[in-house]
Every structure is written in structure tokens, then in C-alpha cells.
Amino acid sequence: MKRILTICIINCLLILAPANTFASPPTGDGKVYYSHMIQDGTVNHEPIFRYFLNVANPDGSGGRTLSPKLDRIWDVSPDGKKVLQNQYVSPFENNNIILSNTNGTRPKVLTKGLFAKYSGNGKKIVFIRFCDDTHSDDVFLINTDGTGERRLTHTLDNESDATSNFDGSQVLYATWLGQGETSTRHFNLLKTDGSSEPRDILMGQDDTSPSLSPDGSKIVFARSFSENGDTQSDIYMKSLLDGIEQNLTKDFDEFAYCPLWSNDGSGILFSDMRNSFQSTPFYTMNADGTHIQKIDKPNQKGIEPLRWIK
Image: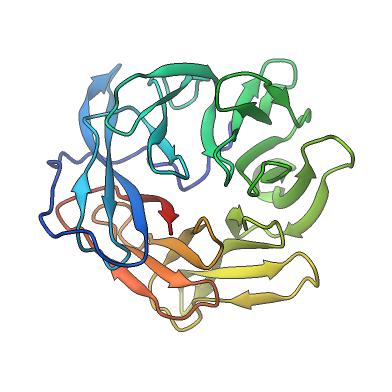
């Protein structure tokens, strides 16, 4: 069965770039964590990429590289002390999910899967695993100490882009229904205690990378559209209370993608995918779409924002 991978997964870059450090002292409203990557050889003629964890102020100043070369980085803990990564085997395999310090020390294998993300309180991890019984990707939840693993979905459809609210009691994920050009992407909200069926909250072929707010009342996502023969993308917010949608980047001229909430829900991180990860700036903004701030690291390639800790 065809595997569904999100466009946020960087898997085709053939660039070698050095790690970069910065001397400015930390200032500003919290810290922004992001990864950048380099090509590090090949396996079976396929490029292998390694990742570095970085931190900067929300205005881009005071940045520094925290980690040595790591395998695929998925997330940083809400206290900024731990990093979730995959031990590389294959982009299409259930690789080991590893929890380590941000400098790469004290690695611990938690389980097998992909796309691992912390809950807002740092006590739960939601992730995706390919399951042999359904031959599809399903959503799982596990405690950060590796205990209490639970399978949350059991479908023949592929799930992706799983995130959770603050305490891990709700999980938002995307599901592909159908095959090929007729398939549609649905966003589903699920209570992790099993007390209800998944709630289909949004259906749209061109809606991607959903993220659930810490209080579970809103989602942000990217919506692509065609304008004058060119593909564009904006960041939208939708209230789960009244269903109202708001375009947060309607006056933003770049390809806005992969939005992430700050830990307190007051801000949003997002990427500019215009250059397809070649030299990728990213941005911070208030949750109402105001005060968009560009963070540009031209010497680092394949940048992916991970977390904004306020």
C-alpha cells in the first residue's frame, strides 16, 4: 500500500552545509527551537541526512547550535531539555524513537515509529507507526518514560500529522480517505481515553499540517491554493467551538506552511516553503496573525521549526 508522508518531512535535499553558531546574547520573548540538516553520505544510492538542533530568540538573534549531528529530529521537550529523534534505518520504516538530552547525550529508545511529538506538559508523546495488520499508518500515544503505550486508531487509511493538546487528552491528526487523485484529507479530533469516536472537523484536499492549540479549542493549518497560475499557501486558524475560520497570513506574500503553536498558545511558528528547503526562513507571529517576524539563517539549509517556548 502506498505510504502517505507529510510534505513537512524533508527527504529529498542533496545539500552539504556546515553547522552555524552565533554570538549574540539571548534576549526576547522566550526561545525558538529549530533543526537544520546536511547530507551525510548515501545508503543504497539514496542520500542520508543528519540534523542539528538549534535555538534562537524569536527575532532571530542569540542563536546557537545545541547538538552534534543527530538522526531525524522531530521535537523538543516543552522545557527545552530533551529532544525526540529517530534512529535512521529508512524513511519508510518504523525506526526507533529515541529520547535524549538536547546535546545528544543519554539516548534512550522509547519505542518504534515516526513523527513523534510531545504533549504540551511534556508527559506524553504522540507518534505514527506503520501497522502490519492494517497495512497503514496509525496513531499511538506513549508516556515519556516509555510506559503506557496505546494504539489510538485502527483503520485501513493512513494517518499522519498527529499533535496533542496540553495534557495529551486530545489528539489531532490527518487521515487520507480514498486512493490516488480521488483521495481527500480529513482532520480528526480524538479523545485519548477512548470515550468517543473521532470527530471529523475539517475536510480539504489542500489543507495540511494541522496543529492543535494547547487548550484544545483551536487548530491552525496550511491551506494551498492557485493564484495566477502559481501555487500559494496561507496559515488558517479554526475555532473548534464555533467553527469560524480565519486566514492569518492573507497579507503575507510567501508560501506559509507547517504552523506550530507556542507552548502558551499566544504565538505561532511557521515555515516559508517557497525555496523547497534550500535556504528556508521561518517566522513567528501572534496567534491573531499580527507582528510577523522573519528568522533567516542563510548558512543553514533544510531548516524546520520545532517549538516556541515562552
